[in-house]
Length: 252
Image 1 (cartoon, rainbow, N blue to C red):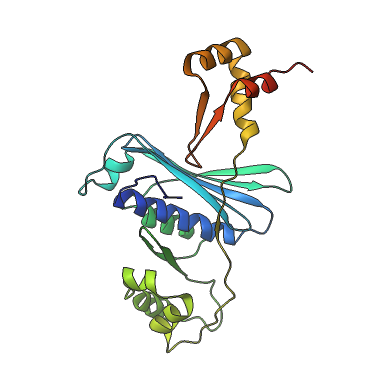
Image 2 (cartoon, rainbow, N blue to C red):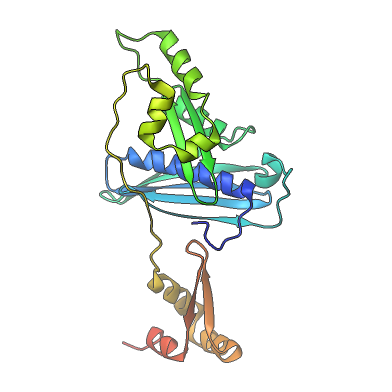
């Protein structure tokens, strides 16, 4: 998702945090569909977008309106805005959308708040995003049971907080669990594969040309020699020539 995009370290970190959160939420989906998370604002970055399907196919993008300095603050980067979470159920073909209030301390704190409010579960989150790696760890307090001890939560979060960004990136799940919780009883589940998936939906872009109107489309082709449309989310250009226009505007 970041290949050939030139994202700065700060943008890459924010993009990684949003992507990790989207993956975690999608991994808990009980039906076929997808979850889309958007951070919209009037800052230097006007849009952060991550979309993950129920089978963990991910795509996303960042739209920025200027350069970001190393000392740019969270508010300067994102400005005033909102976080929109959309859950699409492919079986019912319905979408459920919610707005998440943004914590000025950052996206991680925002979604710790989100988990606590929406799931009624205290949560702590760690995310590290580099040029080659995206790693995240989520710890949640489970509902109260007979064996529950308040001190357990404090102990587990204290142990979790000793993790470093390099360990988060370099250790696999089994090593990470042993490093943090070797005195606890743990269970390691089978891993799931996460894939980058950004299929070109050429028909959608042909419809854009169709809606432009045949005369305007042919005038544009005459002026430019070809029609080029940038698919932002896949970071690819689609090109259309005279034969494409003949087919798009062919009479039934």
